Each structure stands twice: as structure tokens, then as C-alpha cells.
Amino acid sequence: MCKFLFNIFKKKQTSFNEEEQVMKKFLIVGLGNIGSEYENTRHNIGFKILDFLAENESLTFETQKLGDLCTYKIKGRQLLLLKPNTYMNLSGKAILYWMTKEKIPLENLLVITDDLNLPFGTLRLKTKGSDGGHNGLKDTQNKLQTTKYNRFRFGISDSFSKGKQVDYVLGEWTEEESTQLKERLEKSVEIIKSFATAGVNNTMNTFNGK
Picture 1 (cartoon, rainbow, N blue to C red):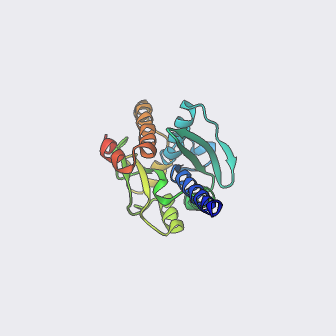
Picture 2 (cartoon, rainbow, N blue to C red; picture 1 turned 90 degrees about the vertical axis):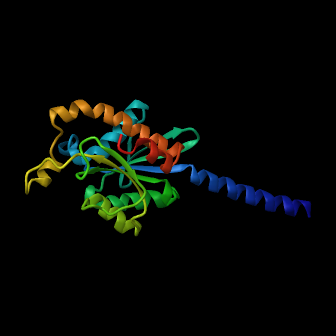
Picture 3 (cartoon, rainbow, N blue to C red; picture 1 turned 180 degrees about the horizontal axis):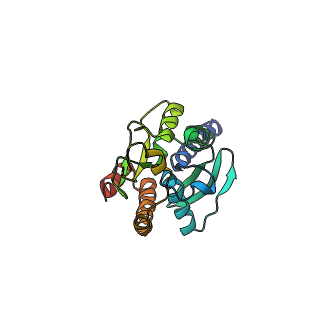
């Protein structure tokens, strides 16, 4: 009888530990396009932020299925950093694959994207919203079948002439923007760390609009 009860307790304990481990795993996705021609474009700010984090923490990305990945550990949390190699329009395919493979709950997903509707350098975290015409978010929404997922929007402004949106988004940063990027990248990394350790609501209250 004692052995039977012990086995039940052990099974529950194992199940609890596995669930706890799952809750401590996060998927941080930077959106962008692969290829050197896109490396320094506004549309690739998601890649740039993750590259900045990886460089500062001496992490190395490895090419795996549907993307380049590396793992960053902080305060008992495990962050899987993903740069999809599916090109922007199919970002959701890579996101869904790695969420499923690593059993990462939806609330532990953070998608980093550029945003034309925000002034340059504005940082804003949201827990839901429309795709805003962004193809990467549109595919993510379609694959996940929900608009309720965390997204970190980096403002790139809308300083382009009529009919020049594509050229602007796929264009490189101006000299003035480039000088301000380092501080904005540092703040972006702080947001990622806070999201995993302090939670999305605390992070929004601390960083949104700053």
C-alpha cells in the first residue's frame, strides 16, 4: 500500500516538475528576412535585437529547422531565441513549429517586429492586437489562430513618400538613426529579460513608451 501511494506521489511530483519546467521556457522570436542584403534594413530590427543580445551574452546561433536558434538562460528561465529563415511572409510557420516542439505555452511567446505606426525608437509591448498590415504578424496570427499573443513593437516611423513604403521598410537606417540604435538595442534587451523574469504586465508598465 505504501509503495502504491509512493508511486502515485512520485508520478504527480514528476508531472508537476515537468509542468514547472515548461512554464519556465520562453520563445523569443525576432522577425526579419534572411540574406546579407536585408541585414541592416528597418524591417530586420527583430533579427538585429536578438543578434545584439546574443553578442552581449557570448551566444552563438545555429541553423536548425526553419530558423537560426540559440538558448539564453537567465534566473532559472530558458529563453529560446529564434530568427526564422522562412522569410517574413511565413514567419508563423517557424514560430508554430518551435512552440510545438519545445512545448512552449502561448503566454511565453514574444514576437519582435518593426512598426511603421510608431515614431523611430519607440518601444511598445502588447499582449494582443491586429497585424497592422505587417506580413510577419499576419502569418503568425493565421498559424496560431489567435491575435492574443505577446508582441514587442519597435518603432521605425512612417517618414516615407506616398508609394515608397516598401522601399522605406526595406531601406537601411539613416546616419542619425544608426547613432541612436545602440541605446535602443540595449533597452530592447532589457525588455526581453524583464518579460521572462518579471512578467509581461510589469514589463509593459516599466518600459512602454520609454
